[in-house]
Image (cartoon, rainbow, N blue to C red; front, side, top):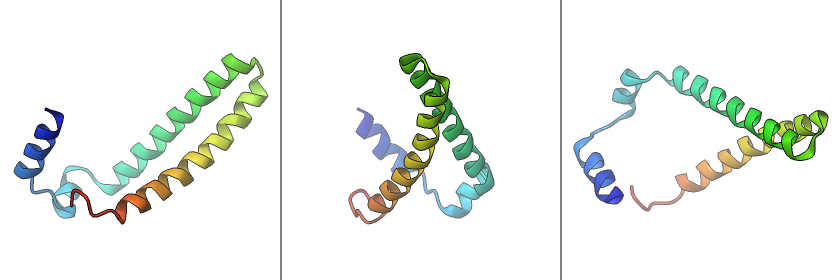
Length: 87
């Protein structure tokens, strides 16, 4: 069902960079990405604080997570860029 919806959406949507740019500016996407990363890091800090009971340790975990998740996401995107499936 989900696959059918995705295929139907792809078939009916002729999205290009130019049309995407009109609907959402690249700057907006960058701001959304950064805000999402901040929310994710704050979530990690709060969970770490609840589990460890140590706020300094929670912030340390959050800062490491911030960097590692950005690096992993970049590598994930590059890997998917090289996969031809679904293009």
